[in-house]
Every structure is written in structure tokens, then in C-alpha cells.
Length: 125
Image 1 (cartoon, rainbow, N blue to C red):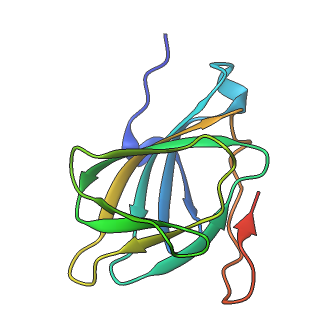
Image 2: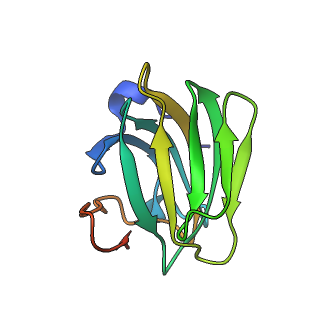
């Protein structure tokens, strides 16, 4: 049995917020489980080429948008989105408060992965 407390887990500044990484590859569960904080007012250009990701919003508000901006979905507590095809996307947090997500990655992360965010390319790992 694995028991972990938020103040004891690896915390990574992923680029536009913090990722509390509860389960990683070394835990041998086959997936990563994170509590992800997205800083208010940020827009992140993201892509996961080696991982599938699902995110469940637990606090705040924001949007996830396709790479071309043609489709945007609102994120608020109780809404899940899953990147089931390594989808490049924009993750946008509302300006008034941080957005908080529960994130699951498969295959699992090693633990130190961070995004390199800029306006020209989708950051990926």
C-alpha cells in the first residue's frame, strides 16, 4: 500500500504552475497521478508525445483549446478532458484564480519533467 501526503511529494514548477506528483514511474503503478495547479491568467502551449493525459478540474476555471483554436471547451469543477491522441493544445486559466486539476499520465512520468513555454512551439515531453 502506498500512502503519500501533499507536503511530502515531489513538487515541480512545470512552467505555468505547480505539479504535486503523487505517483511516478518508480512507484510501479503504471501511471502518474498529480495535483496540478495552473496559475491564473496563463496560457500554456502543450503537447505530450510520449504520454496520454486525463485532467479532472477540481477548482477554478479555464479552457482547453485545440492547437488551431477552432474548438475550445470550458473547464470548471466537475469537468474532465482527456488527450487521447497526443493532442497539441492550449491550456488557459481564467484571470481571477488559479485552476486546479487532478492529472493522470500513462505511461508514468519519471518525475522531473517540465515544460519549456514560448509563443512559437508546443512544449512537449
